Length: 145
Length: 136
Image 1 (cartoon, rainbow over the protein chains, first blue to last red):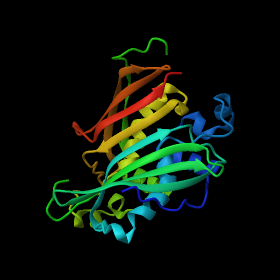
Image 2: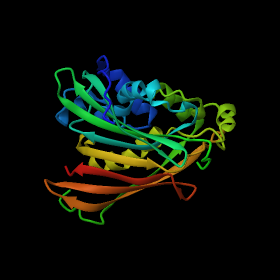
Image 3: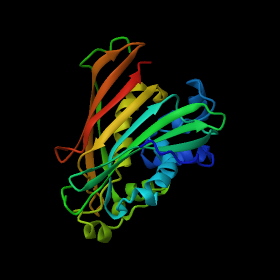
Image 4: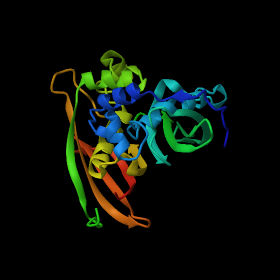
């Protein structure tokens, strides 16, 4: 389909938010918590765990997901698939703009399957990561989990 | 990591998941879908119980790779399919997922492909879970 949505306002990545997210997934990797440890790896500040990219992409993809023109039934949506491709880790202090694009939408066995790509870049246009999300809106014809 | 070869296994880990973890993850991630914290809602939409966020399971599975790498920034690509929900009971013990990984391919520029296996109660909860890493 290739429908694109306007870039989001910049998401400014806070050091404490990174630590909060890392703690929530139980991950004590020093690169997520300790500025000195992150700097020893060559980063300017703590870096975010890989799946934190989804938190930022979520705003951009929900904009696409809620598009009334796509006409999906969001009362029965499940997350089917998730992919990440990184140019570099997200670093505290980054201001990240998310741009969502609908890659594919198809109906299979009564289910709507929507593939959304979200490109995450700095305000100056440096690519940081791309997330690809497949959601399945289960139709009444298909009850399998 | 010059000794990495096809067939090299990553240290497996098991991760305990309790309702507390799901509430904390909801807050940290901003995903407040009630199927992850409200049993009444979860069962009303046909689920057996409150289920873990797929992204929580994906985050835990990634730790097997990033703990092995040391520098999480060496993860270049990471992909999973969510094949089965992980129900989390309302008790102190919660539930557990087991994650293991194996190098399946050596790529150019010192990179490798890792396949991950994540199971709950002996059944796979992630399908086609893989990562491309830069070997440090």
